[in-house]
Each structure stands twice: as C-alpha cells, then as structure tokens.
Length: 235
Ligand code: NAD
Ligand code: ZN
Image 1 (spheres, protein in one colour):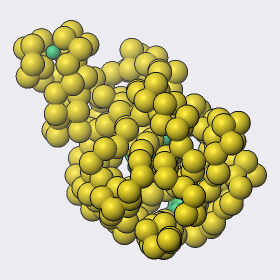
Image 2 (cartoon, helix red, strand yellow):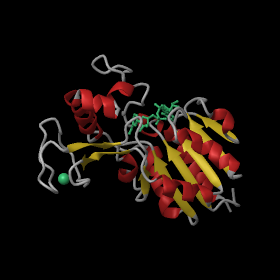
Image 3 (tube, helix red, strand yellow):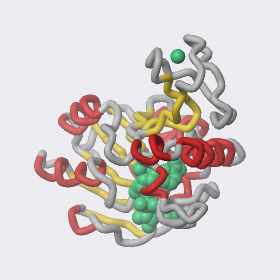
Image 4 (tube, protein in one colour):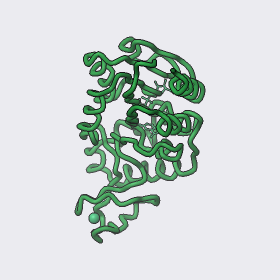
C-alpha cells in the first residue's frame, strides 16, 4: 500500500464489541420490550421521554465502565504515526477511540458524554443521568437537555467534512459495521465511484461486503492491529 497517503476509516459497534459494549443487534434486541429502533427516534422521545432518557442514562453509565481494546489503541497509534492524512469517522457514541489515543474522531452519530440543550443549542459535557431533568449548565433552563445522539430519522453530524475527506482519500477502510444503517452504509459505494480502494475488516461478511475490493474476517482486536502494522511498515 505504498501508493496510499490519505485514508478514511469508518468504524461501527464491532470495534467496541470486545470492550464489552453490545453491538446494535446484540443490545438485547429488546430493551424493556422495546426494540432499539423504537427508543432511538424523535417520535419515541416525544411520546415517552422517561423511557428514552432512562435507556440513554443506562448506556451512558455503562460505557464509562469499559476500556478501549487493542483495535482502538492500534488506530490511535496509526493516527500518531501515519504521515499522510487520516480521518476516523465513527458511528459509535462511546469515547473509546479517544481513550485509545485518537484525537481527531468525527462522531457522526453524536456521543453519550455530551448533552444537547434544546433551549441554547449548547452541548455541555455530561456524565450523569438526565432522567431528573437537570438544569442546563450553560443557560440554566430546566427540562431542555436531551441525549446528544443522532436518532433514526435525524441528520448525522459533520457530513460535509466526511464527504471532503472521502473526496481526497485513496483508501477507505470500514471496521466493525454491518453496512445496514445509512448514510454510513453508503460510504463504500461513494468511495468506489470516486475510484478509491476499499477494505473491510469485520467479524463476518456484512451486508455490504461485496462492495469492497478486499475483505478480511475476524475479531477487530486481531485484524486492526495487524493491518495498522502493515500500513506503518509499508515502504
Ligand atoms: P451493527 O451492530 O449493526 O454492526 C456491528 C458489526 O460489527 C457487525 O457487522 C458485526 O459482524 C461486527 N462485529 C461484531 N463483533 C465484532 C468484533 N469483535 N470485531 C469485528 N467486527 C465485529 O452496528 P453499526 O454498523 O455500528 O450500526 C448500528 C448503529 O448502532 C450505529 O448507528 C451506532 O451508532 C449504534 N451503536 C453504537 C454503539 C457504540 O457506540 N459502541 C453500540 C451499539 C450501537
Ligand atoms: Zn442550555
């Protein structure tokens, strides 16, 4: 891969699975008899805010007890040592890439550790629960904070930056994502249209596997460090 200088990496729940964070499909499938698809929508929040806030309070608490794994650490190392440009885009709402040493991660689906205030549009750091409707630390309004995560039907964050990074990339790598949730699932086809080489690292063949030039199957903690070493040792 000595002709590669600009890389875009897309990660999904699979990169955090070995840290003990359930993937989307594993997350019980059911949570208090609700499918995740049914709690992760603006309509669900309008209909039953307590249910949605409790669900996210539980997830926010859980991720703070987890640690980054060898895949997160390897991507942190790649970011530090890669001489070309590297853009890590994640669908994950945990902070394990950052705790694994990556500094510039685009969280296209938001994050568990900030809240979004619907009164002042601020995004204060947030680690505790939201269920008791705490006041916004930025503007003082009560009952205006919601999880800062992008729900089904909402527009992902920073799409312009992602598109710009794809346009100048020569390698697109997808790690631990099922290729089922759009628009991220469409990045591989966008990359192909742009003539960018594409590589998938996933536990098993995904819905989008056939779009990739190359796919490698196995756990992220094995595949990602091996691929990073390969990239860093290429002449
Ligand atoms: P997904 O659950 O749909 O897909 C996960 C993919 O990872 C699957 O293809 C699976 O085969 C693969 N996988 C599982 N274990 C793996 C491992 N050890 N190594 C490598 N691959 C592994 O998740 P998705 O594609 O990220 O999309 C679903 C949505 O769910 C996203 O929007 C994301 O925001 C959200 N989500 C986030 C988190 C998190 O922040 N950690 C967790 C669950 C869901
Ligand atoms: Zn506010």
